[in-house]
Image (tube, rainbow, N blue to C red):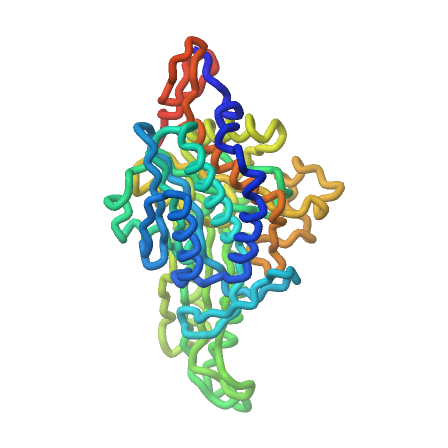
Length: 456
């Protein structure tokens, strides 16, 4: 049996993409200018639901508060889940773009903060809406069911919240979960890998207790600011001295708050600590080290009370199913060309909650990163070298106030990648006799079996 390549079977699905790009660009700029914090994506959810309904999808709103799920059933065949996240970050935008965000929001602690799409979730929503539009317009060219998930609150764990809100029972059960993330790599390039692809993340709130007093008489107090400073510095030794050079771990103190006035020693100091790891053993070692160091520094400072530890959120390692990843990599390479799809040498230390869907469903999942940075930022840089040397210092990364994917080439890349990844499961390859193979599988002569999977 000779099966059509993904590039051939994908062509009908992409028909009309160029004509849709002006509207998709306008959508992206609108979403970028109106970011919303986690679990507050009411405007974004309304835009998504309206577009899906206009395209002909069955739409459910309010999943886990602000999540939107679209279902398009198109005859018998596999069920494929495609996911985009919607939330912005408490970052003040400094891109200088004409559609830059000036939005503000109220964070969980009740503080008014600036809000920006500093992680590209507006790009994810735009690309998935472009893909859903083309799927609805070309139903004659694919079969099965697509579940389009527009997830709230990726930054704080919205995927588990959707599962807890009955996702598994309310929507068709997917056979594969596919997702993507825009990255500060040059536009036109994609990267993924089998196995662990993004690190686990654990965030903690640590409260240190001192004894307040006057700044002029520190001997009468126990200074939690000094205690906190000692903790921050000592935590820098965890990865450098307790984690092996071949292992992956990150410890970051992203927030330290104490006191209200320069001449008052406060009673408490609060640290917010983030930990990244790619194996359970490293995760356990780092968590134990952080706990030990915090308690030891408190004791060394004469703290009147033991520190308190409160979890903020926790994401597992994002794991790509090897068999399904091979299918997706092959499909993306066929469509985008050799040299455009890279295998990442190791897991990225950023974290995601996307893998929660595949784990809860017990099905394979695949997650990839696609470049959105202006190629001019990489003038004279060999793309192959990025895998070894990382990004140049001059390229703004995700969560930077300067992070800004270039919409023109990035949007069609993201739309194409979603459809290309889904095509092996959804399209209808035909053999040379004219019969149709609706499983998307081939034999040992070089064909692909997309039904083979391992639980992620």
